[in-house]
Length: 304
Image 1 (cartoon, rainbow, N blue to C red):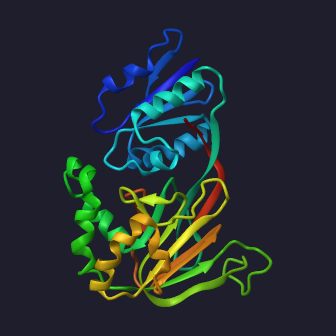
Image 2 (image 1 turned 120 degrees about the vertical axis):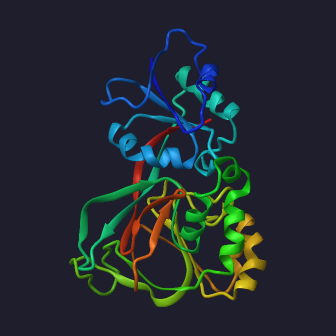
Image 3 (image 1 turned 90 degrees about the vertical axis):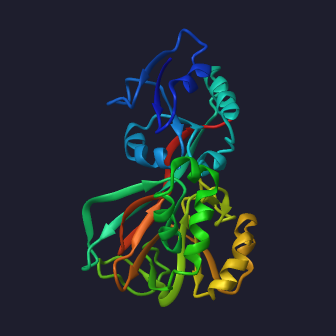
């Protein structure tokens, strides 16, 4: 068997040694150029490292084993890989031919022009959650913190002051799945209907996994193999009330709050009066307007 290893920022080659006990496996560092060069890819890192390689991994179509070694490891948690020990367990099963592979969905963000036309070459995959609004601003601030601090509650440290400084956005969200039951007609010819019409919005999260931000269960009902994204929208909330309700996100209890909307959709378009940053997996992607959709069975992963 042939394996490729990707080491994320701050990962030592020593982390690879426990996986190299079988001398019959041929190893190479970095992503291969073609899918026939290796049989499996091991990726050592966090959500940001995974995010930056998703496009190439999807193109190659090779099974991927995630080894959590970053400041944020929500994607690994979603795959029930909480530690290197879990990754080693999955690796040994894979090497023994137990076919512990799973096809999962990914999200795709496409930047759009003001004329409701997609910008050429402006699409990006994401594995966990894409966000517009408060969580995008929090991600921006968290990314300026030292790496060691981001891995020790940095998202929360960035969130708490941002809650009291962030102003709600006028945000329009339209379904763009193109199903016959949808009413109206989009300017690009596809069926569409308004989900949210220019209402004050604190944040809109489009989730492929339940977790983001270091363990916050923003989308407790999310599944990675249903061909849909779970959408969580938080309307205008008094900052102090939002601060008090923040802990409920860790248990997914925020869905009971009156200002929170929650539903599933396969494709949506997000528009704001002024361009707003869009983040996914903690990384900057582009600015609104955007289309965000689910791509079913886009990535093969090795699981415990």
